[in-house]
Length: 280
Image (tube, rainbow, N blue to C red; front, side, top):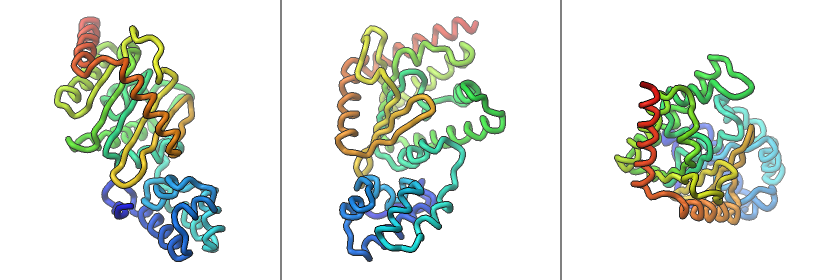
């Protein structure tokens, strides 16, 4: 495993220190990651990400680590220090941290433009909808978090990002026609300057391997890849290597049914022009 990330590279300092302490206590106990993961009923990948500061341990994780390492409740007592983000759903917190460290991102969304590519107006409309309704204060807080996430795309080279869009995400009007035109042209801009590889799964593809829901795949320089899937009011981070391989295979299979990058940008631009015409 490579060096631990340092605070300032996207991981809060408290999490880096927590992970460093976990690794130190494990080594003092004479245990490998594999041995500790087995005794604490964790996957080795899960443990590796916790030691790297990328994964927030659950209270149950912390209790088991204290029991196995005989640390007298240390990891439970200091867990609240890490709980510094209440701006997003709990199940999505780890994903935000992973995004900051990923070298490659591949994303599929069957319904919406992915959060990292959303304009402020589109994101505000999405966050203003749904149930239960959010107060303006809560909506604005979530909006700031979403826009901050997109800063990882300010670096041209990393992460390498592929976006697979269902045509439904283009055709479903979110807000006004003018808002949709602006959003789709934003995606075209990312694609034309080669910052994001964009592919559209057209309606003509019919049923495909990813139709059932959102999937994100993330690769890293020094740790195993992970996958994230999401449904209504729920999300799950997958670290098991066989499960991640299955999601990768499904993504590749669906990608084979998609339009090329150039064809996809042409379709998105065409739909944006339809929205512009409607707005006039």
